[in-house]
Image (cartoon, rainbow, N blue to C red; front, side):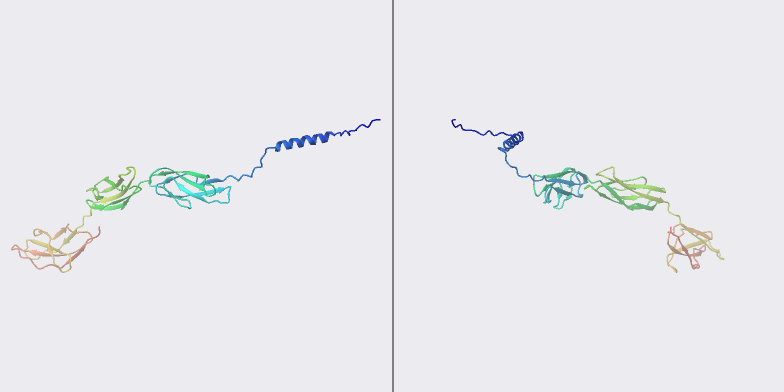
Length: 283
């Protein structure tokens, strides 16, 4: 018989066919692919506080929290006012809206901002003294201090009596309680007040009496001094016909010394009587 080449048929099992198909798919998916480097974690910054309202010229401490990097340093900036490298913000003197920003030192494209609303400082007025006690017609100097504005001028007013543009108050002639007020020119809604108690002066007097002279006299002269033993000054304008006299010209808190002389028809005076002392109380 002629030689015939024989070919061995290779038979494949279903499992082998499945493995081959999977390998083919895997190789196809890898064709043209490029391995990617792992990406860095995203840097995030947050500010505390994240917004504030601040009076002009005041300060506020900011802090920045940085995540996604070991370099947590930031640089600070502000659109108005100033801020230190430690985050201490100082508001400007002009009211308005501003921004404080912290920028990552690790990646200067990463930052966080906080809005800042700057308000004008509140005007306040203080008055000195805050109370006073005066006699009718008496005077008292008042002063006013204005803060929160470059305009420190005030207008003065009083519910009784009068007050000058410089704060010099003159009490009225009627006793009572009155109000002195200083009002800010910069902000007429801001003022300060002082209470003034006005009283009528106490009318002090010294009443003198003496024994009548045994001689023929037409009257008596009354003398007064402020030192024991004199000198004395006559305080009556004409001889006093009676044996008593009321001195209405004495002052509170003073001590007076009195003597009396007898006057005859010829105008001749006797020697001084014995001295008496009168201590006038206060008030």
